[in-house]
Image 1: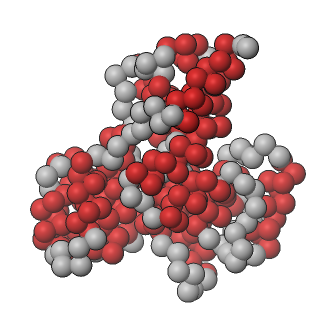
Image 2: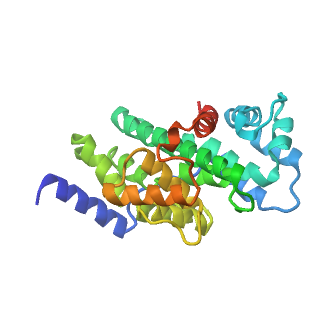
Length: 280
């Protein structure tokens, strides 16, 4: 057995026996998720909760003032920001803004891998949200929400994280960075499901994390996972190029995107930049 095969087997054994250390949501994100389920919570109470984390509070004000929210009048306080965003969206947006705190390692090489994973997640979220925003501007009654999709796309590959952080405890995994990334992506689906269940995420998020790798559109659709697939297509990451092209043509024929090189469309590109800006 090669070194790579033995490392893969070691990780699979740890997964099988629940010995792989899984990430946990930041405390403030957990509190927001729990309190947002309370039908009696008020906007001032939610603002007070978010205000316990100054970094998150600053991010929420930034989101409220961003093109992502489609508003031009500037807000200056957290109470104003929470009021503008609204309770219906605050849960997903607050968790999305807090997620970056999870992608942290004291090991320099591991941190580099986590930074790459986080930046890719932001790209996927920005492409997915931009294409959904374009689609819903031409199609009403889709039932799809941008804040839901943004968070869903940010965690679509969260299962890669514990594989990368395992390298803190087993530096043999750091010997080949490309192999480590390949291994993380290969094992990500099942780990993503475990993490999202542990975090209390809805089944919709779990299924998206499991199914986005399959180059097959949702039926009936489009659904949230289709917009994540478009982000994957934008990076040319499906192994079967012919299948990827057929999927792209399907989305084009269905009117989900305006053109094959959809990321060059000015409306989508602008929306993409608007989403990326809230994470800068």
